Each structure stands twice: as C-alpha cells, then as structure tokens.
Image (cartoon, rainbow, N blue to C red; front, side, top):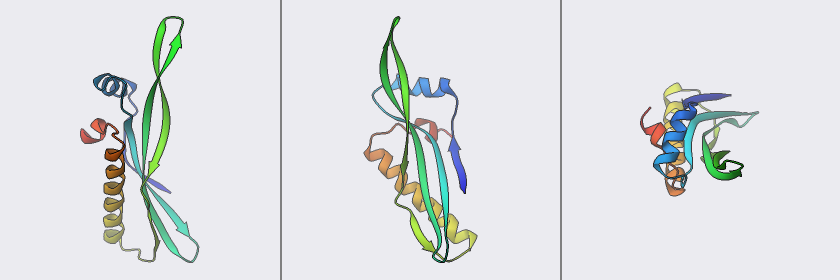
Length: 116
C-alpha cells in the first residue's frame, strides 16, 4: 500500500525546472510512503521519491530533452508492531527527511516539492 505525499505531473512545470538548471539536474516529481506488511514481523515503512533524469536525444530537428524515471528510496524502518497513528506518522516524517537528505546529496532539484 502507498500514500502519496506529493506528486507533480505537469510537464510544463518539469520543463521549467529543467530549463532553470540547463538540463544538469534530476528533478523530484513525486514523494510517497510505502507500507510493507510483514507476516509476523509487523510493518515496514519507507519513503520513495520519483525523479526525472534529463538527457539529450539527437533528432532531425536538433536535440530534444527526454527523461529517465528513477525511484530513490529511504532505508525504511522494519518490524513496527505498533498501530498507533501518531507513531507511524512520526516514522513517515523521519523517512521523508532521510529521503530528502539522499536527494540533496545527489544534487536533485526539489523545487517542485519545495513549492507544494
């Protein structure tokens, strides 16, 4: 099961961020929490981010920018036995923070997420 935290599908928005960085940075377009139910070991929670990685393609009219989609994940927390909503919510926040740290290290543009 997953819970979408942020999703930006507007290609125009993605294109604007891409132009801002001159096609030199991947762009974060989605953040979601993934819940993995483990049989007897409780629940697993991790944050995932979908990024668009720009690359140039030669065409008859010159060059076009295309995008490869890639998912980056936090490390996740496993074996959660509590069903307390507040506790789970705190774990979600920690996982998103960890994911954002990874994306910062990878120099991913988070402009769309920051402006949500």
